[in-house]
Image 1 (cartoon, rainbow, N blue to C red):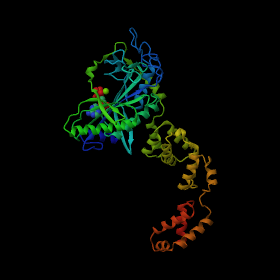
Image 2: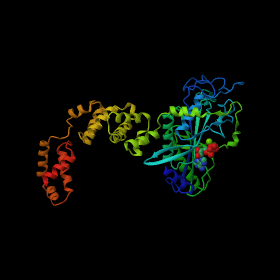
Image 3: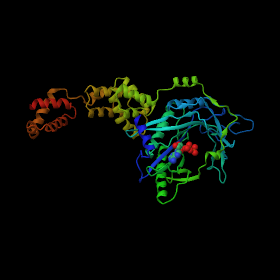
Image 4: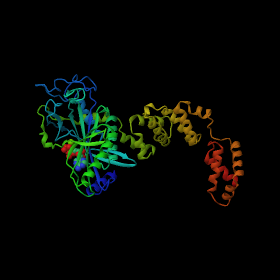
Length: 496
Ligand code: ADP
Ligand code: MG
């Protein structure tokens, strides 16, 4: 991946690798909390299901009652292994849980169990396309930890309630290097990571319910300067807010610097109603948390054969799938990335090819006409009214020359709107068959030649382009049903 090397070289030399904003380079690093899809909590047997009555899913361990002890959930570890395998990371054979100490009402133990010095997943990277450009963001680590409870302020006048249902929910915190250079790149990274965690089934990806939430660390600098001071925007739970929040933060920081003020490191919150970010607290240093290894939990040991078993059960990953599409079908890397946006989209493409579609044509239809309509109606491929088999039939009729593009679009439209279900029947019913009847075509040719003497003379005088006008006239007169290549040949023969 030469792009990557160049990017990092440029970074080291202090050259900007992204678009400048008012002369400033933007630097972004992400910390993402992915809630793991286990049925029970990370250190207790209470349920992780969302939406239950407050405090009905908090057991003695989650309430931190005296004498209780945490017991590691194997399913959470297995999901961390899956992520590590998917992102090409090192999976630590021995990692350590630590206590992160702080006081907050939704944290009854007075500390959060997390991993600090030795996380379970180390290194790796996430690659994706930003427009047509391939980007790679390096990961620092991903560590296992428990979520805290929730303070409820809305339903209580003058007081707050505490709901500990979420306390002890398993999280994987995925931390990147500060490798992103624009809001667009940051959002594309988050989308790609979201795609991967849902693809491998370790997280349900539900952003409204908080199953996938991102903290964006943002700083700006003049090209060539050392890294600027960052502010961390917490808990972004939609891609739209993410974009608005980072854009706002970049502009805010540049304004501050331009006004001669210094950026103070801080944790900020985005307010979707005002579109602004606002400091919530000065950022703590890790020293403030007094991390130390949790004496209640032994080190997490992962044997090599466990990793191998998980590896053998992994689904084909989007990246591998995209590479297969490039090498087996000759698709561009970009198209292959488009087709592997979700398992269902890739399955649809595979099914169409299996049903006899030329891969390149199927890809064009799926990423073009199909994607446009799905977006317009805000539905996923699962809900597409045109099946993979129908698309294959259509594509075959394009490939064998039966359907010119224009007619193919009409057939697609009929399939989409339910105005027919069999491609050949639609071609028949709508009279879309190309004009193979040379008698009828011959008549049109003669008429067009008679009516366009000027073009005919020009062509005969050696102006090749004049022929295009004639071909266009014939196509029009045939209602788009003639084959342009055939028309060109016939015209040339007639005018020779
Ligand atoms: P902490 O553990 O205190 O949160 P880290 O050094 O682990 O700090 O960094 C947290 C996140 O901030 C990482 O995603 C990292 O890439 C990002 N980051 C670090 N420095 C900067 C910076 N100057 N600008 C933007 N992001 C940064
Ligand atoms: Mg942090």
